[in-house]
Length: 272
Image 1 (spheres, rainbow, N blue to C red):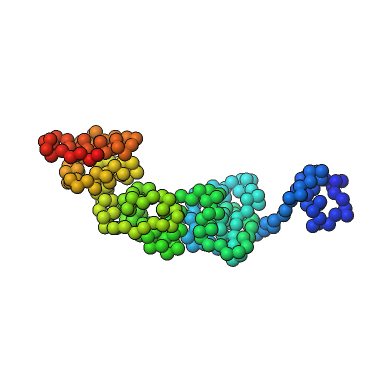
Image 2: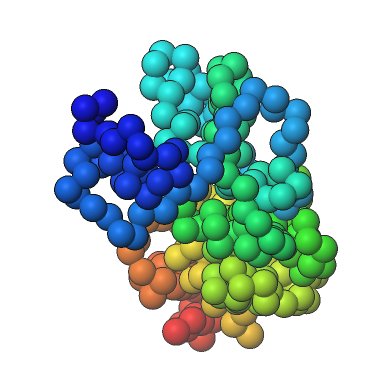
Protein backbone atom coordinates (compact mmCIF):
# COMPACT_ATOMS: atom_id res chain seq x y z
CA UNK A 1 0.00 0.00 0.00
CA UNK A 2 2.71 2.52 1.00
CA UNK A 3 4.55 2.04 -2.30
CA UNK A 4 1.45 2.99 -4.28
CA UNK A 5 0.80 6.31 -2.51
CA UNK A 6 2.43 9.45 -3.85
CA UNK A 7 4.05 11.23 -0.88
CA UNK A 8 3.18 14.57 -2.48
CA UNK A 9 -0.53 13.90 -2.01
CA UNK A 10 -2.27 15.80 0.80
CA UNK A 11 -4.77 14.16 3.20
CA UNK A 12 -7.70 15.82 1.45
CA UNK A 13 -6.50 15.03 -2.06
CA UNK A 14 -9.18 13.21 -4.05
CA UNK A 15 -6.59 10.80 -5.50
CA UNK A 16 -5.44 9.76 -2.01
CA UNK A 17 -9.03 9.26 -0.85
CA UNK A 18 -9.70 7.16 -3.91
CA UNK A 19 -6.64 4.94 -3.32
CA UNK A 20 -7.57 4.47 0.34
CA UNK A 21 -11.10 3.53 -0.67
CA UNK A 22 -9.89 1.05 -3.32
CA UNK A 23 -7.04 -0.60 -1.38
CA UNK A 24 -4.40 1.35 -3.25
CA UNK A 25 -5.67 0.48 -6.70
CA UNK A 26 -5.39 3.97 -8.12
CA UNK A 27 -6.33 2.73 -11.55
CA UNK A 28 -9.83 2.02 -10.21
CA UNK A 29 -10.65 5.72 -10.27
CA UNK A 30 -14.05 6.60 -8.83
CA UNK A 31 -14.97 10.15 -9.82
CA UNK A 32 -18.14 9.97 -7.69
CA UNK A 33 -16.24 9.24 -4.46
CA UNK A 34 -17.45 11.18 -1.41
CA UNK A 35 -16.56 11.00 2.29
CA UNK A 36 -18.80 11.30 5.33
CA UNK A 37 -17.76 11.77 8.95
CA UNK A 38 -18.68 9.06 11.47
CA UNK A 39 -18.04 9.69 15.16
CA UNK A 40 -17.39 7.24 17.98
CA UNK A 41 -17.71 7.81 21.73
CA UNK A 42 -18.25 6.14 25.08
CA UNK A 43 -19.95 9.24 26.48
CA UNK A 44 -23.39 7.61 26.39
CA UNK A 45 -24.99 10.35 28.49
CA UNK A 46 -24.75 12.82 25.60
CA UNK A 47 -27.46 10.90 23.72
CA UNK A 48 -31.20 10.93 24.35
CA UNK A 49 -34.30 9.19 22.99
CA UNK A 50 -37.21 10.70 21.11
CA UNK A 51 -40.52 10.20 22.91
CA UNK A 52 -42.85 8.24 20.68
CA UNK A 53 -40.15 6.29 18.89
CA UNK A 54 -40.92 2.59 18.68
CA UNK A 55 -40.65 0.32 21.71
CA UNK A 56 -37.47 -1.61 22.33
CA UNK A 57 -36.85 -5.29 23.03
CA UNK A 58 -34.63 -5.88 26.05
CA UNK A 59 -33.88 -9.42 24.90
CA UNK A 60 -32.71 -8.08 21.51
CA UNK A 61 -30.43 -5.58 23.26
CA UNK A 62 -28.94 -8.37 25.41
CA UNK A 63 -28.39 -10.55 22.34
CA UNK A 64 -26.54 -7.74 20.54
CA UNK A 65 -24.47 -6.95 23.65
CA UNK A 66 -23.41 -10.59 24.05
CA UNK A 67 -22.37 -10.78 20.40
CA UNK A 68 -20.28 -7.62 20.84
CA UNK A 69 -18.58 -9.07 23.94
CA UNK A 70 -17.71 -12.27 22.10
CA UNK A 71 -15.96 -10.45 19.26
CA UNK A 72 -18.77 -9.66 16.84
CA UNK A 73 -18.56 -5.89 17.17
CA UNK A 74 -19.54 -4.39 13.84
CA UNK A 75 -21.02 -1.19 15.23
CA UNK A 76 -18.38 0.91 13.47
CA UNK A 77 -19.75 -0.27 10.15
CA UNK A 78 -23.38 0.29 11.13
CA UNK A 79 -23.49 3.65 12.97
CA UNK A 80 -26.65 4.91 14.60
CA UNK A 81 -28.33 8.08 13.34
CA UNK A 82 -28.87 11.15 15.55
CA UNK A 83 -30.15 14.67 15.03
CA UNK A 84 -28.30 17.86 15.95
CA UNK A 85 -29.56 17.59 19.55
CA UNK A 86 -28.05 14.08 19.78
CA UNK A 87 -31.48 12.45 19.90
CA UNK A 88 -31.42 8.93 18.47
CA UNK A 89 -33.39 8.68 15.23
CA UNK A 90 -32.36 5.15 14.28
CA UNK A 91 -30.37 2.57 16.24
CA UNK A 92 -31.81 2.49 19.76
CA UNK A 93 -31.01 -1.21 20.18
CA UNK A 94 -27.43 -0.76 18.94
CA UNK A 95 -26.93 2.18 21.29
CA UNK A 96 -28.01 0.33 24.42
CA UNK A 97 -26.13 -2.80 23.35
CA UNK A 98 -22.93 -0.75 23.02
CA UNK A 99 -23.55 0.80 26.44
CA UNK A 100 -24.07 -2.60 28.08
CA UNK A 101 -20.97 -4.01 26.39
CA UNK A 102 -18.92 -0.92 27.31
CA UNK A 103 -17.74 -0.21 23.77
CA UNK A 104 -17.81 2.83 21.51
CA UNK A 105 -21.09 3.76 19.93
CA UNK A 106 -20.62 5.07 16.40
CA UNK A 107 -22.97 7.69 15.02
CA UNK A 108 -23.81 10.00 12.13
CA UNK A 109 -25.51 13.37 12.58
CA UNK A 110 -28.49 14.34 10.46
CA UNK A 111 -28.54 18.07 9.79
CA UNK A 112 -31.88 19.87 9.70
CA UNK A 113 -35.33 19.56 11.23
CA UNK A 114 -36.49 16.01 11.91
CA UNK A 115 -39.86 15.01 13.39
CA UNK A 116 -41.40 11.73 14.53
CA UNK A 117 -42.94 11.08 11.15
CA UNK A 118 -39.47 11.28 9.60
CA UNK A 119 -38.18 8.92 12.29
CA UNK A 120 -40.89 6.42 11.37
CA UNK A 121 -39.94 6.53 7.69
CA UNK A 122 -36.22 6.17 8.53
CA UNK A 123 -36.89 3.15 10.74
CA UNK A 124 -39.35 1.62 8.30
CA UNK A 125 -36.74 1.71 5.56
CA UNK A 126 -34.40 -0.29 7.83
CA UNK A 127 -36.84 -2.66 9.48
CA UNK A 128 -40.53 -2.50 8.81
CA UNK A 129 -42.51 -0.88 11.60
CA UNK A 130 -45.17 -3.01 13.18
CA UNK A 131 -48.73 -1.65 13.68
CA UNK A 132 -48.05 -1.35 17.42
CA UNK A 133 -45.13 0.97 16.65
CA UNK A 134 -47.40 3.34 14.72
CA UNK A 135 -50.07 3.21 17.43
CA UNK A 136 -47.49 4.10 20.07
CA UNK A 137 -46.00 6.89 17.96
CA UNK A 138 -49.28 8.65 17.14
CA UNK A 139 -50.58 8.18 20.68
CA UNK A 140 -47.43 9.78 22.06
CA UNK A 141 -47.84 12.64 19.59
CA UNK A 142 -51.18 13.39 21.21
CA UNK A 143 -53.64 11.83 18.76
CA UNK A 144 -56.71 11.13 20.91
CA UNK A 145 -57.93 8.48 18.47
CA UNK A 146 -54.72 6.47 18.89
CA UNK A 147 -54.63 6.85 22.65
CA UNK A 148 -58.19 5.54 22.80
CA UNK A 149 -57.40 2.68 20.44
CA UNK A 150 -54.21 1.78 22.32
CA UNK A 151 -56.19 1.55 25.55
CA UNK A 152 -58.99 -0.39 23.84
CA UNK A 153 -56.74 -3.24 22.65
CA UNK A 154 -54.46 -3.29 25.68
CA UNK A 155 -54.06 -6.17 28.08
CA UNK A 156 -54.89 -3.81 30.96
CA UNK A 157 -58.36 -3.35 29.49
CA UNK A 158 -58.84 -7.10 29.52
CA UNK A 159 -59.23 -7.54 25.76
CA UNK A 160 -55.57 -7.94 24.72
CA UNK A 161 -56.48 -7.80 21.03
CA UNK A 162 -54.09 -7.74 18.08
CA UNK A 163 -54.12 -4.43 16.17
CA UNK A 164 -55.83 -6.12 13.19
CA UNK A 165 -58.66 -7.54 15.31
CA UNK A 166 -58.88 -4.29 17.23
CA UNK A 167 -59.31 -2.36 13.97
CA UNK A 168 -62.07 -4.75 12.97
CA UNK A 169 -64.05 -4.02 16.14
CA UNK A 170 -63.05 -0.35 16.16
CA UNK A 171 -65.26 0.59 13.23
CA UNK A 172 -63.85 -1.90 10.71
CA UNK A 173 -60.94 0.41 9.88
CA UNK A 174 -57.97 -0.53 7.72
CA UNK A 175 -54.29 -1.01 8.51
CA UNK A 176 -53.50 1.65 5.91
CA UNK A 177 -55.61 4.13 7.86
CA UNK A 178 -53.80 3.24 11.07
CA UNK A 179 -50.34 3.67 9.53
CA UNK A 180 -51.18 7.00 7.88
CA UNK A 181 -52.39 8.64 11.08
CA UNK A 182 -56.03 8.79 9.94
CA UNK A 183 -57.62 6.50 12.52
CA UNK A 184 -61.11 7.69 13.45
CA UNK A 185 -62.93 7.65 16.77
CA UNK A 186 -65.97 5.36 16.81
CA UNK A 187 -68.74 4.35 19.17
CA UNK A 188 -66.43 3.01 21.85
CA UNK A 189 -69.26 1.52 23.92
CA UNK A 190 -70.40 -0.56 20.93
CA UNK A 191 -66.83 -1.66 20.20
CA UNK A 192 -66.48 -2.74 23.83
CA UNK A 193 -69.81 -4.58 23.65
CA UNK A 194 -68.52 -6.61 20.70
CA UNK A 195 -65.18 -7.20 22.42
CA UNK A 196 -66.95 -8.40 25.58
CA UNK A 197 -69.05 -10.81 23.52
CA UNK A 198 -65.92 -12.09 21.77
CA UNK A 199 -64.27 -12.75 25.13
CA UNK A 200 -67.35 -14.71 26.17
CA UNK A 201 -66.98 -16.84 23.06
CA UNK A 202 -63.28 -17.34 23.83
CA UNK A 203 -64.29 -19.55 26.76
CA UNK A 204 -65.14 -22.19 24.16
CA UNK A 205 -63.18 -20.97 21.12
CA UNK A 206 -59.55 -20.48 22.13
CA UNK A 207 -58.76 -18.70 18.86
CA UNK A 208 -61.77 -16.37 19.06
CA UNK A 209 -59.65 -13.22 18.81
CA UNK A 210 -57.84 -14.41 15.67
CA UNK A 211 -58.72 -12.08 12.84
CA UNK A 212 -60.68 -14.45 10.58
CA UNK A 213 -62.84 -15.87 13.35
CA UNK A 214 -63.36 -12.43 14.90
CA UNK A 215 -64.41 -11.12 11.49
CA UNK A 216 -66.96 -13.91 11.12
CA UNK A 217 -68.28 -13.44 14.65
CA UNK A 218 -68.63 -9.68 14.14
CA UNK A 219 -70.87 -10.28 11.12
CA UNK A 220 -72.98 -12.74 13.09
CA UNK A 221 -73.09 -10.47 16.14
CA UNK A 222 -74.40 -7.57 14.02
CA UNK A 223 -77.23 -9.66 12.54
CA UNK A 224 -80.61 -8.32 13.68
CA UNK A 225 -81.77 -11.76 14.89
CA UNK A 226 -78.62 -12.64 16.82
CA UNK A 227 -79.08 -13.53 20.49
CA UNK A 228 -75.91 -13.75 22.53
CA UNK A 229 -77.35 -15.88 25.37
CA UNK A 230 -78.51 -18.44 22.83
CA UNK A 231 -75.07 -18.39 21.18
CA UNK A 232 -73.30 -19.09 24.45
CA UNK A 233 -75.67 -21.93 25.34
CA UNK A 234 -75.17 -23.57 21.93
CA UNK A 235 -71.38 -23.14 22.12
CA UNK A 236 -71.35 -25.01 25.41
CA UNK A 237 -73.39 -27.82 23.83
CA UNK A 238 -71.37 -28.01 20.63
CA UNK A 239 -67.86 -27.02 21.78
CA UNK A 240 -66.48 -30.35 20.56
CA UNK A 241 -67.35 -29.37 16.96
CA UNK A 242 -65.22 -26.21 16.98
CA UNK A 243 -62.08 -26.28 14.85
CA UNK A 244 -59.78 -23.92 13.01
CA UNK A 245 -60.83 -23.11 9.46
CA UNK A 246 -59.27 -21.15 6.62
CA UNK A 247 -61.83 -18.50 5.67
CA UNK A 248 -64.30 -16.06 7.18
CA UNK A 249 -67.15 -17.70 5.24
CA UNK A 250 -66.29 -21.13 6.65
CA UNK A 251 -66.34 -19.71 10.17
CA UNK A 252 -69.74 -18.09 9.57
CA UNK A 253 -71.09 -21.46 8.43
CA UNK A 254 -69.63 -23.10 11.53
CA UNK A 255 -71.13 -20.49 13.84
CA UNK A 256 -74.49 -20.72 12.09
CA UNK A 257 -74.54 -24.50 12.48
CA UNK A 258 -73.80 -24.23 16.20
CA UNK A 259 -76.31 -21.41 16.70
CA UNK A 260 -79.11 -23.42 15.00
CA UNK A 261 -78.31 -26.78 16.58
CA UNK A 262 -81.42 -28.65 17.68
CA UNK A 263 -83.67 -25.66 16.91
CA UNK A 264 -87.06 -25.88 15.21
CA UNK A 265 -86.93 -24.82 11.57
CA UNK A 266 -88.82 -21.60 12.24
CA UNK A 267 -86.25 -20.65 14.92
CA UNK A 268 -83.21 -21.12 12.70
CA UNK A 269 -81.33 -18.06 11.48
CA UNK A 270 -79.27 -17.61 8.33
CA UNK A 271 -76.20 -15.43 8.83
CA UNK A 272 -75.05 -15.26 5.20
